[in-house]
Image 1 (cartoon, rainbow, N blue to C red):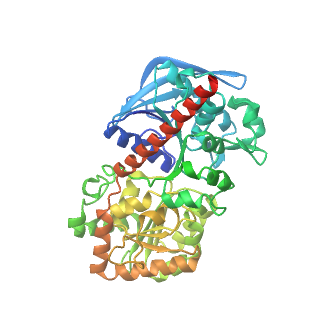
Image 2: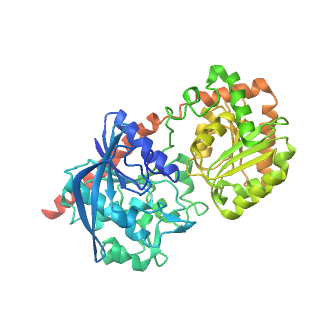
Image 3: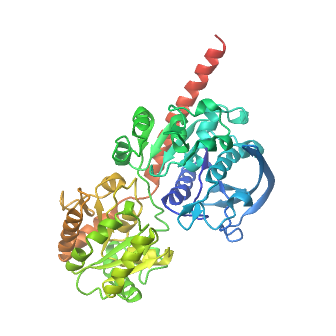
Length: 494
């Protein structure tokens, strides 16, 4: 099968979050399974053209964004068996950020990602690409299914092509004022409660969900949760009406890149059978961050420092966490007020709390490889990759039992002999602290803790199993598209 994979970011080229990890690893996993995968994404100003071997194709696409004609040149690079085409349009994509700066979205994001969607479709004709299926990711590419279903005339070569829409985080939907209609290229009939209209605004993700032949999200539990008002962000009714086309597939991780036995960022490589070497990484981490690390376990956190990730819960529980004897090693960037409060706590307890504001890839590896336990108390979590990495690195996670965290971590309190981590159900400081205390108690029982570490490290968290599930979704989407085309043909001859 030839899959066209459309995304706004992808490792190794550009990344702000987990979407880039998926858009980088899943196409490569599919390519290894024998599929042809072509990826399309913007050429952002921060992409290292020389380092990634980008070359100009000598072709360009021309589309209209409202009344404005836009031309994008095409460049191409190859990585991991995947051919990636970049839309080179500096006016829209050569900026310091991918989606915004200093916590504010770019005001023309509707135009920018209308360009990504429409130019992706136009590139198929320009490059003679005839994919069997188009896989779209989050709101930034959700206009593609809507265009092909509601306004397909400009792209006749793609008539009948099935689409899959993956929701990585329903909290981000691509909401714009109704005035954005002028740049999207859809008919007025698209902006109804059954289409892209959402409480008087345009909702791009809703359009993708409604128009795609199949919808996926990134864990089985999250697929159930988003059909309920608690996690549905106003789209629970739409998703429930599409439940027959909604599938939850847990993400994997790149186990070649995330491998403690061959990680160049660690002070000492180790594996399940060489766990004793892990103490060298712990010592190196504590020394680098100024942590004493002598009274209890080192608790690690890597990710966005925002409320969704449970940072408010961490702050509310901070003194209780320190009372267990633990130290905290925190890396990430996020909401200024939360970061400031964490940094103030670190100044008050410099040998117990270390907070590094920003993204530091080598340090993230050192935290996974050196912390004793990994904290992931997210308010909601579509899938999560950090808990998978932490288990692979022998740092049992403490998680809030939601979304992908519920699907991937077996709690110690349920079955100590099968456990891979610890979990709590109520999103309260008390429940969180109780789970951490349970984890600290097991940490202080070396034999039980070592068994827990080894079980987590033995899990298959690769992309291979997930890629097989996507193949099944692709087959179902192709069958629906075929049936739709057959129905249209019958109607045309009646």
